[in-house]
Length: 251
Ligand SMILES: *[C@@H]1O[C@H](CO)[C@@H](O)[C@H](O)[C@H]1NC(C)=O
Ligand SMILES: CC(=O)N[C@H]1CO[C@H](CO)[C@@H](O)[C@@H]1O
Image 1 (cartoon, rainbow, N blue to C red):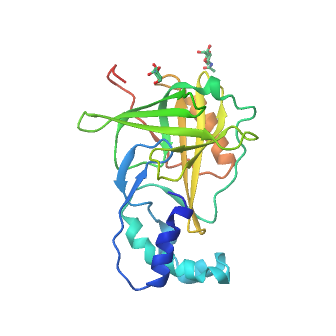
Image 2 (cartoon, helix red, strand yellow; image 1 turned 120 degrees about the vertical axis):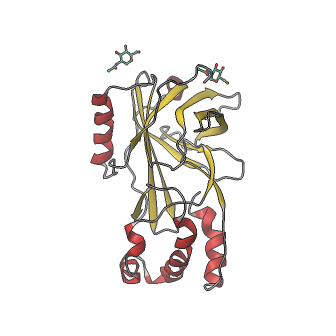
């Protein structure tokens, strides 16, 4: 969910600062997007910092926002664990040059991702294919802990042909498009995908995925891709491997 999508909520809370409202969001687990019903994000250490800290980062005009944010925190805290949450707006790392969407289509396996969700699906795979309307069909599949297959279909678009590696992906028509930026790919072996969401102008949450054409990717490649993230000041410590062992052939 993007910052703009939260505006209605901000407005509501700004105008009713002491109100208790329980909000449930249907959100996707990043652009990789397996649907879950959770809150929006987890707030970590920053949540414990004083209001003065927010004062430093926020313009005076943003005070309403800060108050809203503080009021908002309890509602979103119970959401996904382990998300990488930072003060400030999203970074703007460079993306894959001369990105070729056609070479990128097909099947990808999720090797590692940031953040970890408490929902531990495994065998997470995606299949990208071209639609007649020029958009990209996205099919994500995972095996849930109870053994059932969860499949979600979405649509990706290249919003800006000057930077074709910056895609947007959505899984429901009313959901705002989430960024899906291909930072680096060789098309045949690996892809490094980054996404970031700014919440209420003050915070951002990083998402990153290492994908591969095979269920396994050499550690040297994984390390190479993590170093790219690190070089853009994107934390990789919380990345977790996706289990791709003993996956059924149906996927
Ligand atoms: C990917 O999706 C396309 C279009 O739905 C389909 O034709 C193709 O067989 C799929 N590929 C795999 C590997 O599932
Ligand atoms: C470095 C590496 O693993 N390269 C491989 C990428 O994929 C192509 C096509 O499958 C292989 O030929 C390369 O060896």
